[in-house]
Image 1 (spheres, rainbow, N blue to C red):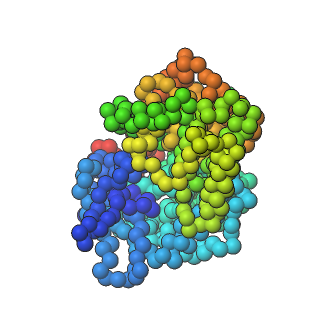
Image 2 (image 1 turned 120 degrees about the vertical axis):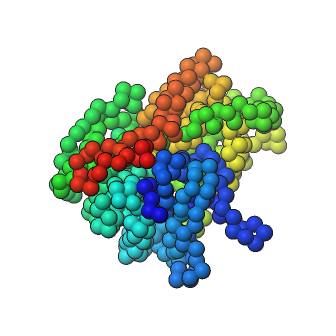
Image 3 (image 1 turned 90 degrees about the vertical axis):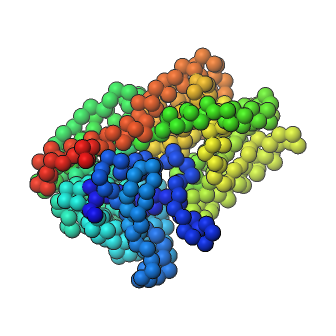
Length: 506
């Protein structure tokens, strides 16, 4: 049965495990991520499908189960799995996406590596995703494509199925033309995105950059520009835009350009933050700390996350503030993003070396200034650390959004704690009540952590109340509602394939 909504995402929407010799599909361990939210959209349609890839030794093996039916809390939907060899996965994802696209998206030209890219394989994989989506979609269905590793899918899909509505959402930053146009495949990528009906981003800066890139490569007209909501315009923050293009025209077609930040499930986090189990865990953490303040940093091991710069700032803190020795402790969670890639292994090695040096210089038998955690912390334990922390120190050099900052605020139902946040995280556009810092500046980083440690209770409460109001307004449900509104708006856009059916009415 064809689907009214087809979600195209590289990850499968469940965890696949072998239990007693049988393959079992179960819900993701963390119900707070983007995947459960995407699956919730299936509750608004009669029939839904999900397209993902699965590694296979032999893609031609007739025993490979290409389509499976899932029944869970979100309803019944099918999952089409594209069999990719390990070589295809490495080429399409680890090399092209991570070594060529990722550094450019985050404006790290010096990390860009063009030489090993196998562009024909990237095209081949994207074509396979497009074919699978085309086969699943009803006439005028919504096909919702996610993230930069599937950039070519919209263009291929428009060729195969000109009748469907195509939406694309970027979960990363999108750079300005002088950065993006380093990519030799820029015209092919952008022309594919211009085949969409909706192109979505987290914040206005990214959508503005996309339009500038498109206009640098093609004859694209801005059909509509709107002022950015006042609460998203804070003076002095690096990523602020005061107006943003929301509709563009290309080759007689209208394309909606959206800026809508992904949020967190505030109710889910707050409920667990207030639970008895969390309270017990917080008590244990605080007892171990004694009178010391806990600084908490949580991220993946990636050159974009600023882990090295943050550790160096902590080292400077202990150098210039002897009074804080044995009075502060940094829990630095840096989870390896991909151990197969040399760039990430190098970053992890540097982080371990600096953390070891700090502990060697300033530690004692009774006190270790840095607790370095290199494995993922279970979410229920992470919430307890959010509640126990005096400061959440979130200072990436570049980040599309950063949900850790929002999770921390959602967990602080006690209206305590301080958020120190990089102005180069997309979340900083919304969260101006944080202590906003520039991770490229020693002075800015050092003064921000000094301010956070010294902040009085009244100011903490005032800032946290403002932050909690913001993340409640821009929570995960608000993001989902805006995506549905955009799907339905395509029906009124005047494009030839629109027939008037709405997703929310299905």
